[in-house]
Length: 178
Image (cartoon, rainbow, N blue to C red; front, top):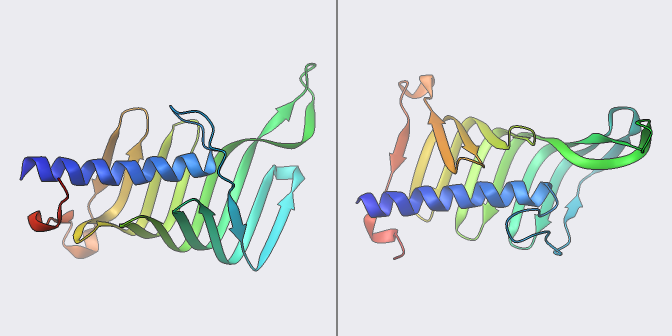
C-alpha cells in the first residue's frame, strides 16, 4: 500500500509540474519545450500597464496532452527592463498565473479541479483551491487546497472544514499501474 500511495503522490506532483511548465514556457530540467501553447477564449484583453493578459469565457489552454479549462485566466508578466534599467514594453517571464471559476486541469488519466488555480513563479508553487480535488484513474485526494512546491517536490493538501475538517484520499490498489 505504501508503494501505491507513493505512486499516486508522484503522479499528482508530476501533473502539477506539467502545469507549471505549461505556463512558464516549458523551462525545466529538460530545457524549453518547443510544443506550442494554444489558448482559446471568448475574449482576450492585453494590458501593457499591468503587464498582463486576461482571457475570459470558456478558456481552453493546451500544450500537448495538458489541458486547462477555466472561466477566466490571467497571465501576469514580470516587467522587461533594458540595459539602463528602464521598463520596455512587451512581455517578460510569467510572474503569476491566476485561473478563476470551474478550473479543470487534465493530463492523460490525471484530473484536477477547483474554483481557483494560482501559480506563483517567485515561490515556485501551484495552489489549487476552492474544493480542490485530484484524480489519478480511480484514486482521489481532496481538500480545501492542494499546494505543490516545485523545488521541494512535495504537495500539501489542507483540510476542508465544510466536509468535517478532514483531508480525504481514496486509493484503489487494483487501479495503480506498476
